[in-house]
Length: 429
Image (cartoon, rainbow, N blue to C red; front, side, top):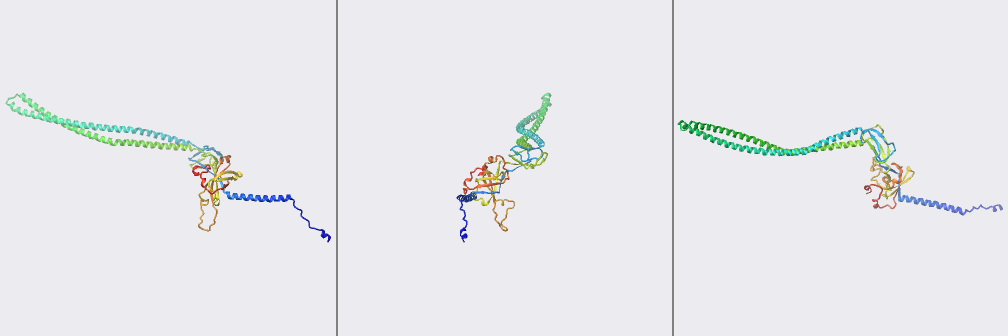
């Protein structure tokens, strides 16, 4: 009994104040961290939107042959960086040089024909004008000749009348002298003189009549010449302008031939220039599939150039994330391939349709059982300081990106039209 009374339960040692303080600190620290985590989660869920369905995009330049020919040299290798204007591939230019020389010869011939046709225009104009003037002069001369012959014919007719009158007088004198000479009233000499005068008068009548006939024939001939001159004048007046127009048309046709020949020369020059394939932009060579000696056809792919100074990000956000997202919002971009390296950007475009609607076979929800699936909208994000942040050109199209879009203070889209993100003016508007 005495032993039982002396035995008492062991008392717990009291904790030291230092341990109590440390426990409180841990508890407060955990609570503080939980508060920070909750605040960070609330901040991100309220004022930012992100997605892991995003990648770097850029222009891809597919270089192809514009002419057919054999490759004589290739000046680039796979993954080589080139600058705009650098020579990439050379095609044998001999055939195109010959074609150029032939086109130049055709052009020279066409220019000579055009010069000749052009010179002939004023010559034809002067010639037709001279011909018209000469025919007018011929008509005037023929008219004067007709008038002159008519006057001469009238004079010849008067001489015929005069000769006939003289012949009648001479014949009557012979008739009067015949009885007188028989009675020896007049001498035989006088009678013979009267007979001779009558014979001469009749001969003069015949001569005058012949002259009259000749003058009348001359009138007919002059009238024919007048008619011919008038016809020639009408023909010259009618055909002269037409001849000038025809020569002008030949000159225009020659000019058209010159332009066609010049076009062939220009095409030959272009084809000759296409034998040297140069880089249209700066970038990195990819997918090179051309070698020396290859026979190319027009349009055949040679290589691809990927520019590294014109990149952007295409992020496919869920439709539930777009309520407060609009253009010009700031974005923080993290690139997985660069160890989470950050870039700055801004939202510049929001797609016009969802990815499923733009697919080859859009879904048809009017048949069968419908299951709602959250759709994704492509959003374009442009880098705002790409030259500085990508000075080493390590950023490549296709890299996966995690964009964080700041949607703090959103809800009004009025002031987003004037944001500057390095886009062309028409895209900003």
